Amino acid sequence: AAGGIGPLIELARSGTTVAKENATAVLAKVAANDDNQKAIAAAGGIGLLVKLARSGTTIAKENSAAALWKLAVNANNKVSIAAAGGIGPLVELARSGTGFAKEKAAAALRNLSVNADNQVEVTAAGGIG
Image (tube, rainbow, N blue to C red; front, side, top):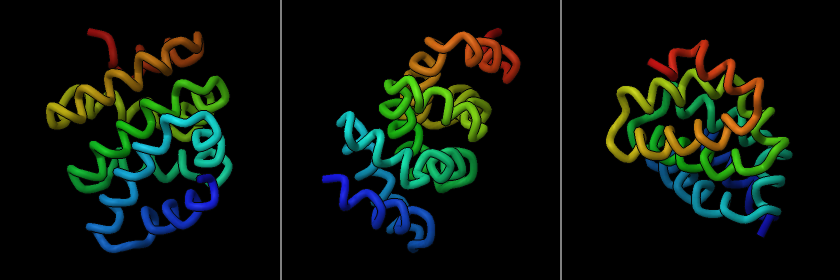
């Protein structure tokens, strides 16, 4: 399964708008698997998903938030998502995204907040209050 991760990430990076939306949807689905979580991170997918959560289309933002939620189950990915600047866009989506984006962004922030450093960053990004 991990062999398909690289092409999906490339499609999410440089495909058409619809291709990016579809690729992020697939990444969100396959990110439920532990090996795929590691493969997505190793292939540079975390930074790309953070970027799309910040500035993608509405659908790409939703899918990216869903993928980041699942990726944030992994302890190393918790650190990598924060290091890639992922907390701010997730807080913004939790505040003002679509209903689906709000739900997935909040779930991602919940998973990220297991990490004490991330708790501080969520607070600093305005995630509380």
